[in-house]
Amino acid sequence: MENNAMRKVFTRQDIDQMEKTPRLNLVNSCVGYKSANLIASRTADGKVNLAMFGSIIHIGSEPPLLGFMQRPSSKPRDTYSNIKEFGWFTVNHVSTAMIQDAHHTSAHYDSDESEFDHTSLDEEYVDGVEVPFVAESPVQLLCRFQNEYSIQENGAVLMVAAIEMIRVDFGLMGNDGWLRLDKGAVVAVNGLDGYALPRMVNRFSYALPGKPSESLLVHNGKNGDDLPRQIADSETAS
Ligand SMILES: Cc1cc2nc3c(=O)[nH]c(=O)nc-3n(C[C@H](O)[C@H](O)[C@H](O)COP(=O)(O)O)c2cc1C
Image (cartoon, rainbow, N blue to C red; front, side, top):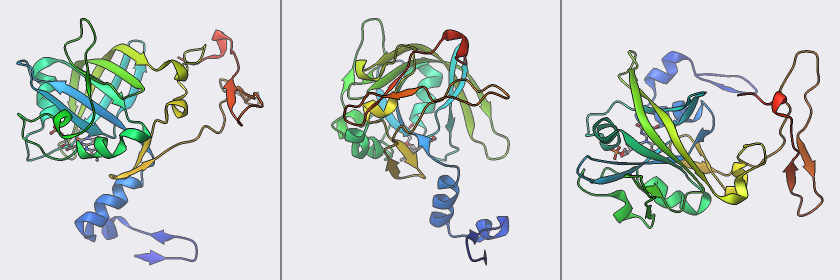
């Protein structure tokens, strides 16, 4: 490993030669903060599963699509097999009050045990939806499996799903559809086991060449809180 005055430097060879745990920690945290979500799924005969995922990504907004990475594993993967079997699942944002339980859902319980029964997280059922949401979660998404893409390099699978319903706590919702996640104390994942609480710093108008980007947040003078200013539809990205 080369060190200079300012940085620690790891070459690919250094990374390959690292012990397993520090390598996992380094490689998982070097990609930056990730979203923190609980995926609730079920088998066709109604066995429920809950598991922590840090790889939920936006895939597209028309149609509304998200994806997540299912890691390669020699152990049974309940989330993956449930989604392939039943098709429907929910993605539930993790807030600060939920982190300890959310983390615990990554423990390998047997397939016939529900992580809801091993945490204080509660199932929430909504009319016409046959898979539970996580009641404590401030943002809940109902998803329908669309496709899977295997990653040739390591056997991981990119799961792609359509977003069929979005349920949001009132306090988070802006007039222009933007969800202000910090108002729900929604956390981010740092590496494999660190949970951080992001703070909103600013929000900008749609970036155009040659035009300085403008702030969309105005200070309302109360509690140091910033509120989103109304923005014209023409300025928003899809
Ligand atoms: C913070 C955090 C993020 C995780 N992200 C993922 C992920 O993106 N993909 C994945 O396959 N496993 C991820 N895991 C591991 C799963 O939670 C774990 O393998 C779990 O046991 C899977 O449960 P299941 O077999 O019931 O689906 C993560 C674990 C933690 C603690």
